[in-house]
Image (cartoon, rainbow, N blue to C red):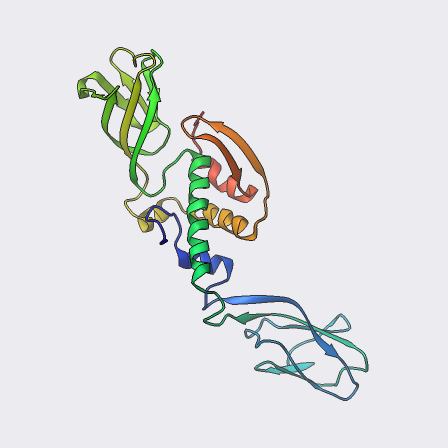
Length: 263
């Protein structure tokens, strides 16, 4: 599998956001370094901290670098040796190595990026990266027919029960996604509409136009990656079916201004 051209975010953006790029860093929240002997003043950490990230405590008392200790690679040297049986703990960032994440991690992330993009598109009723849409409607004997996705660039073809509709037989208001038949859309007829929708012609152009959607997609991706659910809501969406949104509340706030009336 490779990343889809219609995915809103790149693999590198995903890795950087999740802090799993080889040039990014990983987090150690709490490492037990050891206990004091009253004499020993050097202790080794499990990893070499990123400069400025080390938080070191002795018996839960925060120490100050250069005053209370120095760090060289993964070795901490205390100015005064920790007291006998004093607990030494550390938290810090450390650089990932080249083989920390294997190729299957890329495949997983590519799948999650596609899922995050789809969730954001389904939630908003939008298409992000421009592409062709083909959708089917059933005629209801009314003049107005509403398309499922926006923003619409162009309607290219309409068929009714397999017969192509003449361009003079319909008009459009693409800004609100509606098509108008000169008479009515025939009841129970199968209406197939082919149209182009989306913002930019490629991912880079689209990201520049809807940065909030990019931020939302990253939040959704992180939620999927961590397998945690903030709010789950199932809705029956016209033209899409039953949709479950595993979307964090922060992502919803970013996406809500883009959301169209899709019901």
